[in-house]
Structures are given as C-alpha cells and as structure tokens.
Length: 214
Ligand SMILES: Nc1nc2c(c(=O)[nH]1)N[C@H]1C(S)=C(S)[C@@H](COP(=O)(O)O)O[C@H]1N2
Ligand SMILES: [Mo]
Image 1 (cartoon, protein in one colour):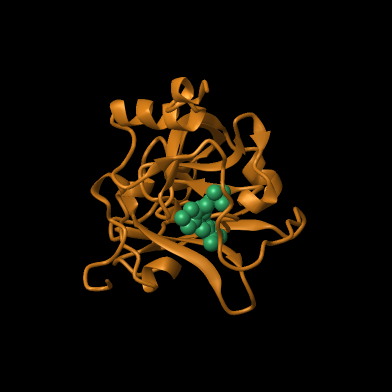
Image 2: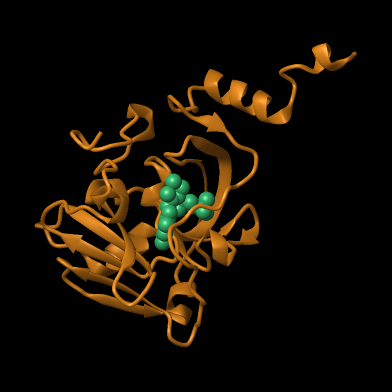
C-alpha cells in the first residue's frame, strides 16, 4: 500500500531523471546503475610476458610498449559517462589510466594522419575487433587507456587490463583489450562500422547507424 508513494523513487529512475535534467542523458538512452558486459567473440587471456601495445601507420616514431613500459607511463583520473548504442548509459565512471596524449606525444602522428583505427584482441587468427575514429576525437584530455574504474582494476570481461575509453562517443568506440592504434590518412570502417554502425557515433546526435545502412 506504500507502493504509490515509492513510485519513481527507485535509484535507477532517480538517476535517469537527474541526468535528463542535467542534459547528460542522450536521446533514446536509459540510465543504468549496473555495468553490463557487451562484446563480440571470446575474451583473451592476458599474458604480461607476450602482451604489447603498438602505435603505427602514419606516425613519426612507431611505438611498441610492453606491459611494464605501459604501466610505467603517467596516469590520470577522469570521471565521465558511457553510452552504449544498445541504449544503456552509465554515469560518473571514475576511470584511471594513461592519457592518450602520452601515446600521441611519443608516436607523433604525421600531418597526413586524420583518422585512427583502434585494434583489440584477436577473436581468432584472422579477425580482431577494430573501431575507427577521427584523430580529433582521440586527441582529447578525457580519452584514456584505462586500467581501473571506480577504484578497481578493470576485469577481463570489461576489457582489462587495458581498454580504450572515449567517453563522448558511443561505447563501441571504447575498444576493450586494446593492442594497437593505427594512424590513417583517410577514414576506414572498423568491425561494427562495417556492419552499418556510424563512422563517428556521437550519442547526443544519435549517430547510431551509417546513412543508407538502415
Ligand atoms: N575488443 C572489443 N571491444 C569492444 C567491444 C567488443 O566487442 N570487442 N564492444 C564494444 C561495445 S558495443 C560496448 S557497449 C563496450 C562495452 O564495454 P563493457 O562490456 O565494459 O560494458 O565495449 C566496446 N568495446
Ligand atoms: Mo555497445
């Protein structure tokens, strides 16, 4: 009999209401309190001895970092929101990791580089996850190679020990188990983009699908 008084008071609905009022809920999204797991294919088994991260393509100084080198780079903490194109958003995620600019300043993309392919774990011997983005969308101070979220190491299922976080684009751009950044002179479709998802993916403009794909 108290349920009428409690209506709309559940924490998820309250969060959604607050985020909508603050202009932080993109159109067509719902607030989530949980952190869903979403990916295609299997999860890699991390091995610090063989793991490496490469920055290549159109760069002045091609880079290969082992796990010890990656974890020795400076880190920052950034609090940001996360919007999956399947319509859930999480808010105020406290990410900790290596600012992408630590990588950009070492690899030095050439003036011809306009786009980047982020490459994740190889699902099998032939196909890896990949996602493309304009260099300008990577080169921001809220973009991280993240190792921790809300004070905990990122678990394997969430892309740990190292994942890309690009908070201002749909979360499919935030490549889990990231292993490489390839700098390119033109845009090229990654995994979901080849399946019809948008080349950029701004959640506030609802850039879910590529023109003509739906
Ligand atoms: N390597 C890899 N990264 C990926 C994906 C994937 O399938 N493989 N899925 C993307 C999608 S669609 C989303 S919504 C987020 C989900 O991250 P989470 O599982 O940690 O919530 O990872 C993105 N990064
Ligand atoms: Mo997603």
